[in-house]
Image 1 (spheres, one colour):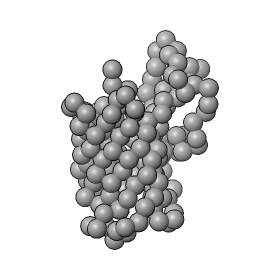
Image 2 (tube, helix red, strand yellow):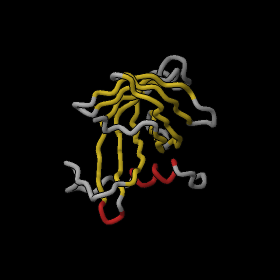
Image 3 (cartoon, rainbow, N blue to C red):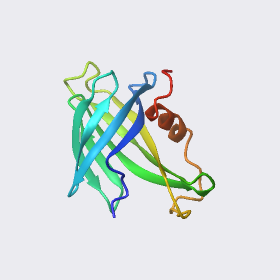
Length: 145
């Protein structure tokens, strides 16, 4: 069973080289085997991404023309509101094609899904970080910050 929902749209924020947060969206269109395809959009135009998803460890890595992203998936169930929060956080490194080439940073992405039957996940005992909620708002089209 693939725990990474596809197709799915996620709100994403990134901090690169200590610079302020950048907001955008990432879309995971498909997973075939362990290969993932989609797009990332920080500036108004979707950019293709390709990478890998490892189900056993819940790790994802993908490349865009400008950066390499790697992170881990966490799942938080919230039965009172029948919602499953998906959260990926990790590190990124900027490629030579970027104006920020050689810089490193962090990123967080989140999306939500409706759950029925009140399923529980292994991470239920802790609340997700606030980034899970703000990036979800962005994915749902909240006003620009």
